[in-house]
Image (cartoon, rainbow over all chains, first blue to last red; front, side):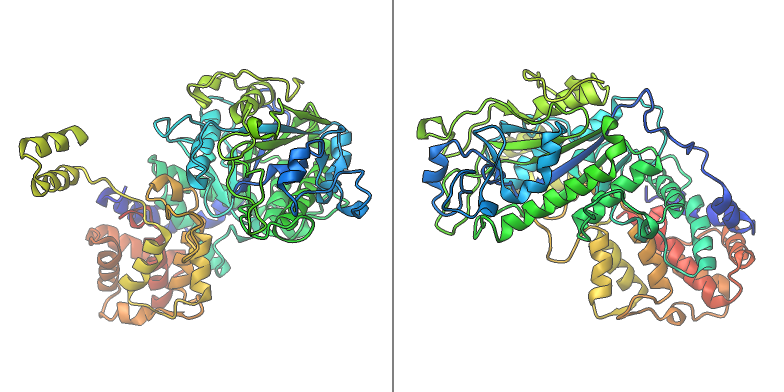
Length: 425
Length: 177
C-alpha cells in the first residue's frame, strides 16, 4: 500500500537488481519456473471457457427469429426478418430455418454449418430475474452472478476460479480482453486485462527497457495484492515476449476481422494454442442498444450480427482441434421489447437468449421453454418472458465442463433446475 | 457507521450539521486508500512533474489504454472508484511512466533539467522522491540506488534522472492516493 515501507521497497529493489549488472539479462533468459508447458487437457481442468458478452442488450428476436410466431410479424412491421419461405423477400434477406419455428438471421448464415454439426446451440427465453431494464444494473448483477445487490461483490468467473484448484500457477489463467478485466472476472483471484499482446511491453530503448524491467521486478517483490499483480504482469510480459502475433497463422478459412473483437478472439486462440495456462477468457462486443434505426439487413444491428458471426466462425475453425475441450458462451444483459418503436428500433425488454458453442454442446437445438409472443404471454410492458435462468446454463457448464461442483458459491442462493445444455466427456 | 449516524441524527433531533460532522469524523478514522484511476495517475504525474501537454491524442491514447477514455465512459455510473477494477492493468501505467520520463509522448514535454537543477545527483534524487512519493529516502539507501543506476548502465546524469522518474511513477507506492 502507499506506505513509506513500500516506497523503501523501491529503493531496496533498485539496490538489489541494478547493483548486479547481469540482473536484467538474468530475468530475460530465465524461463519462468511457474511455466511448464501446461497441457491443454490437464486432468484437473475442464474446458477452456470463453465468455462473449454482447453489451447493450442484444435483440434476441432478430438473432434467432421465431418465424413461426404471427405476433412477431404483427409487432414488427418494418424490423421483422422475413420467413424462410416468404417469396416476396429476396432469399438473402429471409431467415434461415432451423426447426420449422425458429430461424437464424441471414447474417448469421456463417454459423449454420456449426449448428448443423451439432456444435452450436441456443437457449431461448433466457435471462435474469432482475426487472430493472437498466443496462448497468443488469450487467452488474449478471456478471456478479447474484440475485440482488446484497450478494458477493466478486464476479461469478472469479468465484469459479477461487473454488477450483487446478494447480495452475499461470498468470494467464484468466484473461479479460480489453482495458479492464470484465466485472465477471473481478475478485480475489488475480486476473489480467490484456488489450493487445503486441502492446504488452515497455516500448523503450532495449537497454533502458531492461533496466526498467529489472527495477519493476524488485519494486513489486511484495506479497500484498498489488505486489502479486505486478509480479504476474512481469511474468506475462516474459511469456508474451515468446509469442509473435504478427507471425501467428490462424487455421481459419474466414480470417479474423481486424476489429477489437476479431483481434481479441485471435489472441485468445493464440494463447490457447500456446498452452500458457489459459482457463477462462472474457471478451465484449458492444453497441447492441438499438433504440434507433436498428436495421434488419443493413445498419447497426446487422453489422454487429455479421461481426459476431465472423468472429465465432473464425474462432471455431481456428480451434477445430481443440473443440472437445472448449466451451464458448455468448450472453447479453437482457432482451428487447417485441414491438418495434417509432424510431425503427426496439426498447429495453426482459427475456433474451444465450448461444453455446463447443464440441460438447448439445447442439443443433433451440433449448428452453418458449413462452410465446401473444399479448397474454408477454412479460411486463411487452417483453419476452424468462423461462430459463442464465445461471441454469452457466451452472451446468461449471459443473459438467469445468469440473467445478461449487455452484452454491459461484451462484449464491441459486439452485439450478434446468439441465441438458452440454454433455459430459 | 450507518447505525451510529442514525443515532446521531435521532439524538440531535435531526441536526444535519451534527450528522454530517459525525459521518466525516467517523469516516476519516479509517479512510483507507484508493488506487489512482487513470486520470488521477496521468494528470497527477504531469502536474507534479511540471510537464507541459496539449492533452492531445497520444496522451488520450494512454488514458484509453489504461481504461478511462476521456468523456467515453459507456454507462451513467461513471468510472468505478473500486481499486480492484483498475489493478489488473498495470502495463499501460508502466509504459506511460517510461514514455513520459523519456519525452516520448508527442505533445507532452517534460523538462527533466528543470527538476534537477542542484549541484549534486544526490540532491536531485531527494527532490524527485519528495515530489513523487512525498518522502525523502534514507541517505544510505539513496546513495546505493544512485550507484546501482550507474552500474546498471545509467552512465550519464540525464539517463539516471529519467530512470528515477520512471521508476518512481511506476512504483507501487505511487499508484495509491
